[in-house]
Length: 435
Image (cartoon, rainbow, N blue to C red):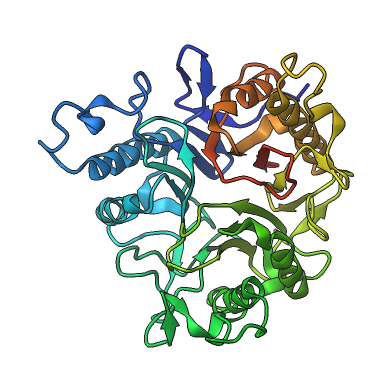
């Protein structure tokens, strides 16, 4: 069982007939986290006035109302922690359709009034509530000595006019870089939105592997430049999230990534998303990173708790200052899905594979948190990537039992199968406070 928690749940609620205890936010030291925010009224699911099913066109467009409700919910979390929207340092958005992106960004521009932190927007297969097209995660800081938020600007690296996010942001010892794609900028030659320099030569069949070319382009032409705004280099990266539109690219991506970051690099999660779920129409990959300022006290320390990971050279976790980042894990080892998480074909209805997978993952995360000098009771963000969103409740119940009924700061989305381990249907990433 976990140690006593030292983080503070913000605006905890109980949802649905399954009595899901959800932490809308978490306060941990100077940090504030909001996860899994949707346009909920926290009673009926998506708020009836957002859906307006009987008169859907009588007011604002549905997705604009949806975004506004989400930001109202985010505002409430930030106020409960003693901070506000000017102190946001990162947002991550999951959408059920790419059509939701422009209305969301329109509302966000008004809400944040030009101070848009590094952002990642990804289209997924399904969200947790019927009628939901948007789900966001956000991270903010509580203002104080050494915690000033600085947006770094660069004319060639700014977000698109519709998004407007900063290409880099610093607060204390940390550097936040937005989701980077191969989207062409300025007058760069392009094909279907992708910079030509990230693609095989047109008409060439043996000009390289597309995912490796695109990964190299993102790292060398975009990521390094964004990090340089804060005086950092690739070696200063602590954690990354990687989104792939083609599940055949897992191992080829990992080979390209390891070539740049070596065998003891940052933690990273590799997450499938839908085809054409990124900003460039034909883009295959998006990467966001969090780094530390060179020479800072928060220098990355990788954690080894003897937990198997899905990829060669993928670290289990890393600690930077008072935060621990756990790579997305599955209930797997080098031979695939572990036996205790598989369905017994002789007795297929006497257990839940999703629940068994979640139990293995949560117990492994607990080992990692202990090895990092903390406890899973201090979890501040849980991202659940499920190949069937109907497995959510079984996965949640594992967290509920492990945390002794404490509210869970979760976000859950349905992703396309297969996951990096083909028989796995549950993958989770977690962040833990270690103050």
